[in-house]
Length: 393
Image (cartoon, rainbow, N blue to C red; front, side, top):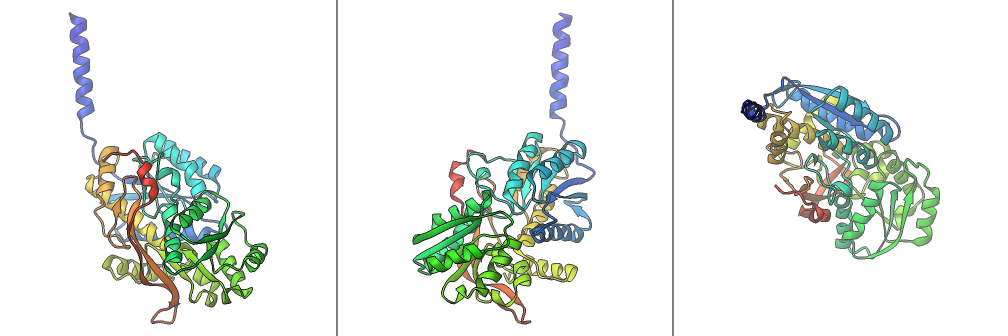
């Protein structure tokens, strides 16, 4: 009898302990891993700078809690990213991971976060895997799914009647997703699809291929220094006289424009964000970023800023209970903040369903080269992989 009573008492106590609500934390610890060195460092630097700008504008807090942001450079190496993530998750016990630029690094790091039961929020990389069958309630994106980011230029090419297009991307996961995305929305003829080396800077062989094929348009997905060199060499070769250059927003943003200059004029691109979007949140962000850093923000910066605002809103709505994973995820899904891109919705896979704008590189009222919005390519565009995601909300 005594044994039965003891067991019953133990079970009651255990049950009571399980129902004790998680208390509010005394701070929010963010592990920020990004590419901060090498030819593609500008991407990670813009995401980092915008994220930290948002934290500064919130008085050093996120959701009312003091924010401890640990920043580390993955050097565009999946192995390095995993080592950093292990340290942040096991030793530092961060509440959320974020910051990664490249999909190959994210695919290595995110499973570590999932295993630890820690939320990962992506301010850029959007691999197909986490959109479909491998979707995970711990994964959120404040950017886009790779297919859609490059599907919008495919829609544009179709809308403008380009009958044949040649495609270029680096040979890694995001590059493959990019060209698959373009092809999924383009109805014309693909002359050829060429996969270059990740980090390649000399495109003389590829330019010779374009000259021989003579396509109406060339679509490229070449982030950072890769795109800078490709555009410079493309225009210098004279190919731009007969062939239209198309890209996603990452290929015609402020960082690329600063490096390339005049040859960028007239380049068409598509993005979920533009520097001149008229909503109040975006205008405040652009002004604050230019004042803080003395340069124009990119869409990478816009995504990093929204990343911080999303965390801020979720911590606030979870009443500081950042260690209560269910409450934190519910607060992330609620998305109670004003995005710089305007309103958007979550797909079932926690990727944004959002508008895509046509942008063209031209001069603003101050004579500066910018990618200005000149129309809408698609409204509330959802990625095709969401249908394979089994999450229930």
